[in-house]
Amino acid sequence: MKHLEAYRQAVLEPSEYAQQLKKASGKKIIGYTCSYTPEEVIMAAGAHPLRLFGTKQNISLADSHLQSYCCSVVRGILEEGLSGRVDYLDGMVFPHTCDSMQRLSDIWRMNIPFGFHLDITLPVKLDTASAKDYMISVLKKFREDLGQKLKVEISDEALQKAITTTNTIRQSIRSIYDIRNLYPQLMPGEDLYNIVRASMIMDRDEMAAMLAETVAALKERAAGAKPVDMKRIMLAGGMCNQPDVYAMIEEAGGAIVWDDFCTGARYFTGLIDSGNDAISRIGQRLLNRVVCPAKHTDLDGRAQHIIRLAKEKNAAGVIFLLFKFCDPHAFDHPYLKKHLDEAGIPLMVVEIDDSLPAGGQLKTRFEAFLEML
Image 1: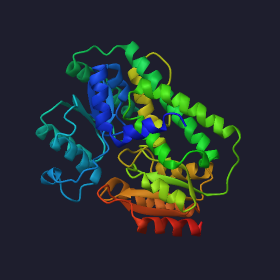
Image 2 (image 1 turned 30 degrees about the vertical axis):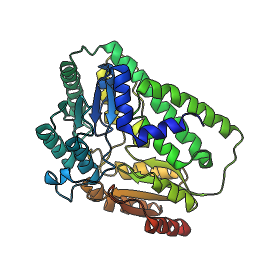
Image 3 (image 1 turned 90 degrees about the vertical axis):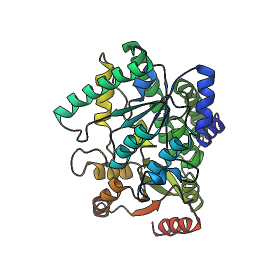
């Protein structure tokens, strides 16, 4: 299928990709840590947004700044900065998310010598009238601050162009998810993993064009496809940095038909509406997004969303990937389990850590869970 290898290579070597892009295009590379980052504003400034996911290297330098009980994502991002492996970054953007990520922002600002540093202090409770006003004011300030750092004027026309591009990317990824939901055998989960992550790494205009061709090729495959009898699984959690998990579940006889990851369905769910005020429309999408545990709406909204997705996608069970030492998701777990139990949806919780590869014991657990469905 078209472009799968290009996606895979970008995901394997994001820094190499970013440096080549910078050299070829002259674009400034702006790192970010969370899918709540308004990447449209970065794109409209003529820069390239690059999400940092952690590190594949041993963590040592970060240990002098962060406790060992801080999650591996935060420690890994700091390790990349302290080691100089991401010294090609022209700036780093930190949206207000969990406590650990906020402290990472402070440590980065005080210890990383390259690139500028910007915080985006987004609202935490998103379902109030004041949250909308505050969200818009924060995004306007980010637009102004970023323009000053890059010495550019971020125009409304450039914002609209960026919105069109990101909407196109989200629509294409949604199409891939929809086709795989019907015929999961047409594309391995690891390829889907690479596509979504590549959309946060690769040049967005290039990505939009490539995805259109990938969707067209997948639709051709789907034209003659028939449903297969497999145990349908939905994944949930913050993010998954281990593509081996997808292969293990599939080798055990499962089919991953949907997810609730910030590096998955939460990234592409919801388009930015058309209209005049681009900043307001970007903010409205962030307010309307399905929340992660670092943001809040009603008390059981997140649980009801996962239950609704599991039923809509006809999932036989949910596997929750919980990053070790991720307090927000850990605090969420008891109430999510309660709601899923009441809905009769089987749930398996797996604690993961970037510093430890997915092993045979995990595969055995997946097999046991699938057998009971």
